[in-house]
Length: 108
Image 1 (cartoon, helix red, strand yellow):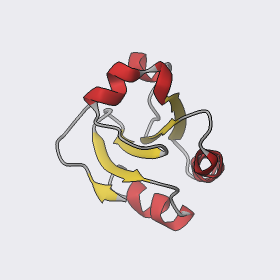
Image 2: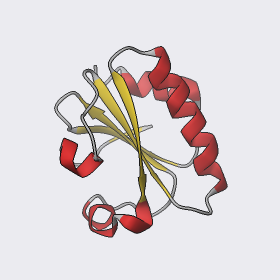
Image 3: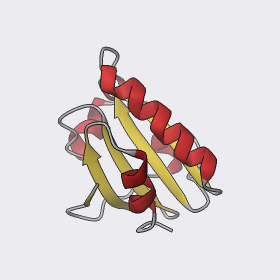
Image 4: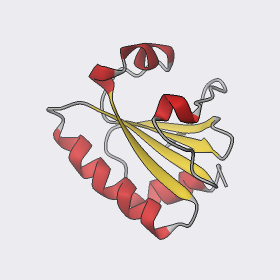
């Protein structure tokens, strides 16, 4: 997972719920994206393992304004947010569990 280019922030209202106490994994998905289902499983598993980490999945097609603002070009795209909602890492494609855990280290 790569570092974010610029510091973007996401608020709880944009995510449809509260930020994680320590970090938030934000997954942008689309309906017919097979890697999105596998990504959902990995992120749910990691968020269940690490206290204070929340996983939020966003339907890219239903949130086009947010997709444009964050320059989401493909699904799945995963953003790692710190406790304040700042994007600290971003990755495109299906992540490996070890990479997600390592990326969380930058957020907590």
